[in-house]
Length: 310
Image (cartoon, rainbow, N blue to C red; front, side, top):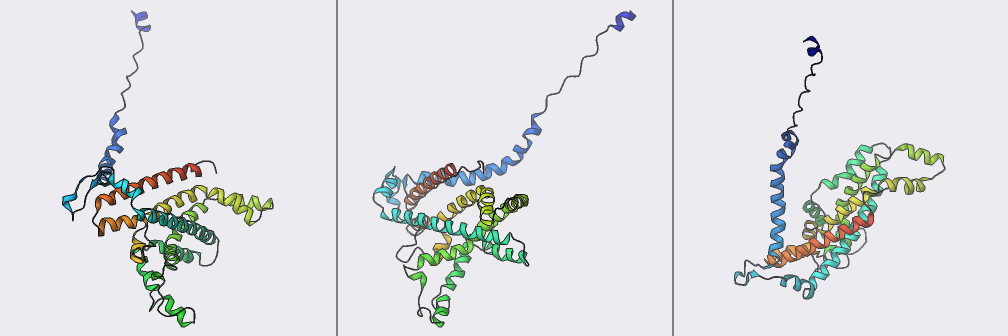
């Protein structure tokens, strides 16, 4: 009996309990209400725009409302010269604005990244225009461009130009005037993002480059720019989308004029829907603009190799 007890089998190891799936799913369950709410607010407007783009929908002419199929899109590409004019101006506006904002934003970021007396105040002054809304920015520059009390009045007092000149009413000066107004607000966006990325560049790299005899230009070209690659790609893409959809500044500053020379595609869409009440055709224009932005953004990210090796 004793020997039998000695050779008795050891007790079986305790069974492992299956990990409950609830703790793993808990984070997703907690964010599900907010995610569903956001999806509803985003998905419903997008899908409704796609639906109305296939409709003839004008509340002021209810007898003409109904399914239109692809008629709105056919009219856009074959019978609407304003679409092509506004699309060309939108491309010009985006190219000029994003290019200049990137150039000046990079320069400002490099300046405020240096050590100097009053750097904190300088950074605050540089970044403050970004906190101003687009409509308020437009109101500020409308006052600055006022022919009676604005810049042109003071220039005329100094003998430069004539009295009563309005840069926003002249087709030869309205585009540069609008560009300068948007630069004032857009440059800080690039400066903020680029400065944040500059803070992460190791100073050892610059010290090693100085030891090897590299000057400021070579350091900028071979160290700074490669490190800023992803920040520049992301900031230019975001700003290009925002500038393409820019309505508030141009609407308040010029209203698309004079003679429609500053009408972008989104501003044309706003005028078509709000002023003409042609929501079906405006939805079709919005769908085309969405496809254009999606295509251009995809191509830009592919060509720039965003997220790849620096």
